[in-house]
Image 1 (tube, helix red, strand yellow):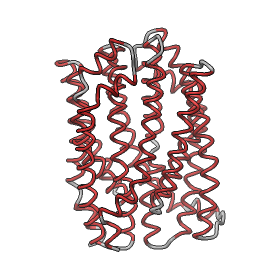
Image 2: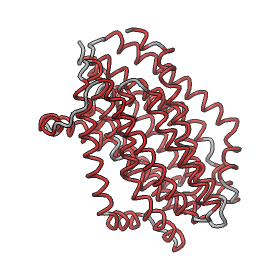
Image 3: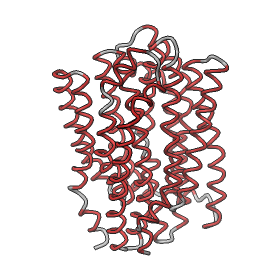
Image 4: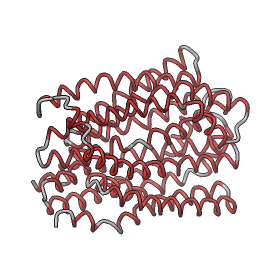
Length: 437
């Protein structure tokens, strides 16, 4: 079993996730490029803010992936495959209910979102056009969370990666088609996401049940699916992750909000740089995702040596890769900026703060990796508490530093936030070992 935690095996599991994750931020980069090369910066600003809002909404339900990984990995380690099937049915039920709730409440969500930002008339118009379409991607995007969590937990990262890759590539293709060929602007970008997410969910949900039949017979047992104790356990895990994810996505929405208090041009420029940071995050998350399954398996099989090795080796890989990304950005950051916009003011603003995209990949590599360790262990209470502390300090720092240093203070605060996420979780690391002592 020890080879499961080797650097070679972690890399093997991570390679398909790496390529799939590489495509995810390319969607945002392509969307930014499409909007950033139009004749009005309001297109880019509206898309940036709307994307932040939907990130807050959908990533808040990231427990559908993260909660699934830990439970599936541990059930896989103890060979409880019937419970995996029941978990999938439970989560699909949650997705249907959540999607219906979001669609029914869309007017209220839109009004609240609009009240947060001070937008020009053009930006408000484009924001609404995007919002009114993107809300209907709820079922597809949340279902993809379940599918990826399931197969990562089963250590079948190729399947989860193909699903994510298919979603991202079709998203890019549909967005290009609708914006460049049909001239739909922000509506084209939103419509591309709706169609690609729905198509991906339909295809890979069918494949999921086909694959589960190989592990165990699929029976819809309502009593077991909606077992009160199982639902309560799932709720406790998911609620902690929900709080953690909501706080995490809020922190980026807060970043956009504070940028908006400076100017809409700052929002647009920061969005370009954030796309590069998100690109590095998704690359580094490949190690975190593959680690989740191994950590959960080691706990389910009570293998302390496996747990120790996977923690050590995954940190080595993540830190080394973070440093490599930082070096690549040092050399090529200006070229990346030129691809995403040809608006002179936005371009110059982005370049003046571009050194942050060089520093952050290495600094943030530690928090991404330790997140994966705690998700695989289903230590969600610790994830929640660490995020509460990190976000609280980040908000205080941001409010003080932005008032004193403007956009520079905003980027300093974000860097502090990434460091705090790792440091607060290191404090709880010993609790994972107590599970298999």
